Image (cartoon, rainbow, N blue to C red; front, side):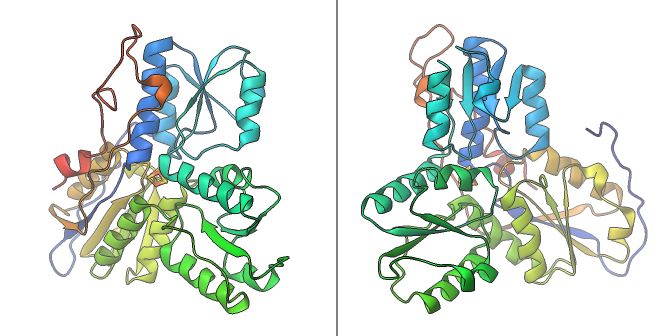
Length: 349
Ligand code: SF4
């Protein structure tokens, strides 16, 4: 993890150097809840607390929690019997829940409620004998968790290119669902192609792509209309972060790069660039964006304007296992009195 700041040079360009800062950006309600859940589990039960998979897809968040005593594992069979384990925001299949119960693990489910909503849809449609076409990325933890709720009835559709090869048993009893963090535009294209093949394909009862993913894509689209370069802060395994790079490129940015840390910004990216767009994925703490803004300020990009396309105030209460304080008394303060989700509104330019 970088500890020194990358001092970029302030080279002359034609025009005024400025930054357009997308809002909303950064922490969503599900990430905020999941990170606080690990912190509160450490507080209530003491270290170590085990976490299945990365609690959220951000390397800075994971290493910070590791220093506090969290141990990240791939599967429940790596966890000593009887220990506390937190399931990540991306959700788990019933098989994982059973595996944890078989080892007498004390499970804390930090699955984002908007992922749980998709799980419930999968269960309900499977029970009603529908075949489910799940649009999502092969190997993503959320997709594995959702498919695990209706394994016999779900077919994964990885991209529009998959559509010609999809086979179904009954094209008249078919519904599509999706991963929560996809590109809205690409997903709609996939649905359009699916519907060409299967005209009676049913829509999900409500959007599966979550509010946070959609809001961040709308904001970066607006920014990309004016920004020559877009910098997206977030980790490579963060689906919604990577989608922000794609969306920026599809909507006017000449170049778009993802960085975990400000020190990854390269001097040559800034050559001749007057307007830089900045945003961050839904699992990114605002401090990392601030470090990017600090380095860009060193390079002369001191004029920072927020481009606000939506206000967000959604918060989820903690997993039920954590709604007590360390002494076991009920904690009525929702997120235990903590939330960093709105940092971008407090700290943004
Ligand atoms: S990106 Fe959406 S689905 Fe994922 S944790 Fe955040 S709110 Fe939940």
